[in-house]
Image (cartoon, rainbow, N blue to C red):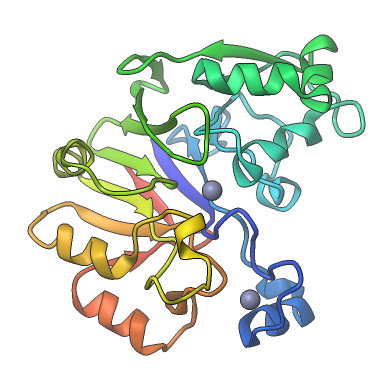
Amino acid sequence: MKVEVLGNTQDGGVPHLGCDCDLCKEVRNDPGRQMHVGSILLKENSDDDTVRYLIDATPDIRYQLRGKYIDGVFITHSELGHVTGLLYFGQEGPDATGLNVYGHDGVEKFLMQNDPYRFLVDRGNIEIHNLENNNGMELQGGEIKARYFEHSLLNHPTTAYIIEGDEKKLFYLADIDRWTDEIIELMEDADIAIVDGTFWSKEEIGRYEDVPHPTIQDAMVQFEDLDTDIYFIHMNHTNPVLLEGSEERKEMQERGFDIVERGDTFEI
Ligand SMILES: [Zn+2]
Ligand SMILES: [Zn+2]
């Protein structure tokens, strides 16, 4: 199986609405450099990539998905960067038929309680399936498994996905409050981990307490002894690791970590 990175930023994207920082200004003036919201695509390891599953449907989905056909979408949780893209499958878009959407039953509740999403179900554009904690399904000769974790801004957990191919295991958790022993154990058990790198430091935004995410500085200490290849995703527009050549990016790479970027592909 192949895993392709379709984007790497936090829900609000880069450029970020209302922001005139150097990065946002630069990227706004040069749409080719736009950084898309975090999402990955799982593809069959064949030339035509006919079987394709998405993890998270972002507001940038129109730019991220090439080709017509998608077999299903695994949702991590129901916030801006993770479910909004589903709306584009409706009658204003390609008017999909029975697109399979998988997630926690809190995601289903959210979709059914909010009309623009409920219409997708009523019209048969999407079909929602509940994926229970620790349960999985076969996928392209491999397996995908869900693990629930608390995410305090939500009334339902966020879902980490563990994707196992013929050769490697990939752990994906883009949005979390803090690292727990359980998460670190799962990362240790995987070959590749793509995890929350929203902020570099707590000082980066004035309202860190309202947006609980671990920092990359803290993560690098906590993950120091893991043999797993660790990459960060879900970076906020303020995170200096998004800037090529920044001191922070250099430090992160010297310490054996990296970020994922659009187009990166992992064979698993
Ligand atoms: Zn998010
Ligand atoms: Zn900005």
